[in-house]
Length: 188
Image (cartoon, rainbow, N blue to C red):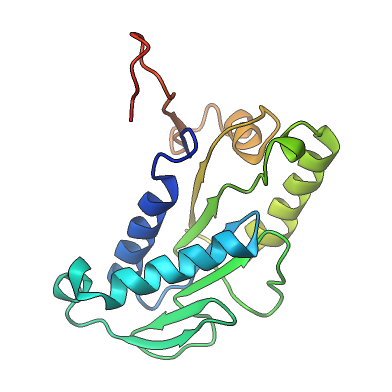
């Protein structure tokens, strides 16, 4: 997981990471989720832009990989060849995933907590954890990796719970970047 303050480029970092993974492994489906459809739409739009806009030179890095299908309504992109489970599916934490995707390469969770009101409610965070474990995590196939990027508002949020669950696992990494360094200067 990566924890950073708001407005420090977390989602942009996630979009670039997804496009790199998609180019390397176009046949493996990925799932990107967040607290709202508006945010998942920004993933879809951002990944589409990186892949298709010549400014990013994505096609130069992955010359043999082609974008073969896009669906803005379903927020899906498919690379290589058309498949039942698309190379990228974007859905909010409350969106339906039944029959829509499997996750073989990356489960990307970006700001699952909707804001301070949810962060201050243990009941709402418990409900969010259940949605994450029942809806998102259940789509993972063996070998799939998880990336969580968020602004942390509570020790009971998904990253906090994962950190406690995997605290002694050498394969789990939890990075946190505070807004200010030891000299009260911005880290960003």
